[in-house]
Length: 340
Image (cartoon, rainbow, N blue to C red; front, side, top):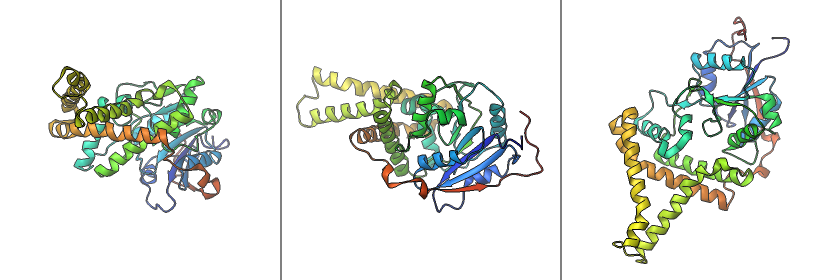
């Protein structure tokens, strides 16, 4: 294997001046051989461009994309080795889980991220769900994603005008061309959620923007479900406006008809709270319930912002010359390469 080069290229995008990378610290604890894996840290201000540049410098048959704060366990590393040994796979990923020592506020965000009502099928990105299965971009996330290099190149790499959602567009392209995408609930990394309410809701706004811009550039039916919060937001504003300006009497048949979706939505919130109690316990589930509404509002607002204007990175302000590559050694030369 050493004559051919590493089987795996681990790619970590990081800001220019960030010194401590949790992902590197966790990788140093693994039994990884330099004949098996190389680690490329790529620094810059536009992650989609950074990762494309890193892939050009990658020698591995497989690409493993991690965020700078993604922390791997030995169990996950064993899973990575096992997946690389399989031939009929193009993309595989798993959840990013909240560490046990997270703050109480961060644990509330885990309830939101793991709820079907707020994140739909994408909750599989934040909690381990089910068994190994064929999947799609709805369940996988870029902070913990393995892609066969040949499939990545065939799809044209990341759309450099997108951030976030560049991985979603890539996986849609791979899936549409017949590529096989898998979700493995045990292939997890530890990663802390946002630390404050404002940061969390800004993230949701940005996710909404990213999905809208992905749909603008790569239209597909896969994004239709993500439009639900945006439609709900418009409905809410219209109904509130009709009642505030007394266009429709509150106590009337027409008023009740207009309010019926709100009533159903309230029932859904309570139902989701009751389901969450079984997994996340009473206090967190009750406190998270009203926050679900704001998840939909901020994501929906971000979606409309992304539809009406470009609010992400301006591709024209970045180029590959602003990206810096570092090849980092995290391996023990005395450790033999895994047998595949």
